[in-house]
Image (cartoon, rainbow, N blue to C red; front, top):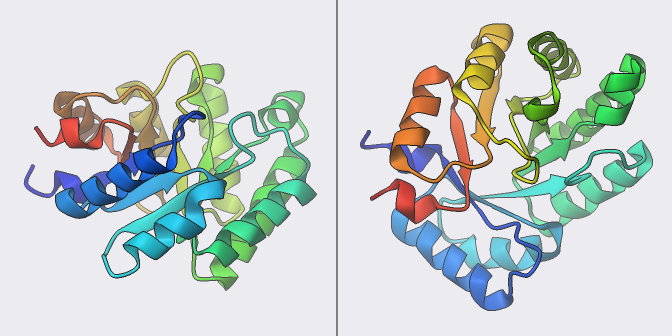
Length: 215
């Protein structure tokens, strides 16, 4: 696929990453013309500044990686990230509330953050962490995110035991149709994996192995 680079969000969320690591990330994102980079909130301002003259989106995470922060905390995180220059937000869904059945809380939280993102011309992706969900739960979570106004659903944080699978991506795509984007992330290390996930329905590939996917 000649345009594979424009599906890739080159990701660096390793807790021990240094400024030198982010400088390499930025340069490789420029060299490979990746669609975007996904970085921790702490690094958004620097990375946005370094990429400002290039067509590379800056993505960051909110409520990451466990998702069970209070909604007020997630909203404030989002405000700061957008102020620092993030183009897109990847929000960890509150799995604890979802599993408890407090759907109004889950949907309301996503809706508030979607509204804030859209007011700032940013996109919102909702991380479902599909390895913890049954097929029926994946379908329900996708519908909640869609009804709440999110732009994408995303498979995984990459911090769970299992990352993106073709089955989960296919199920997510079938559920949301063409109205939403689907991002596959977690454990994607090869070009073959990336292409298979795109064939299954993923619009975006989140991977810390961005350059390897292009080889």
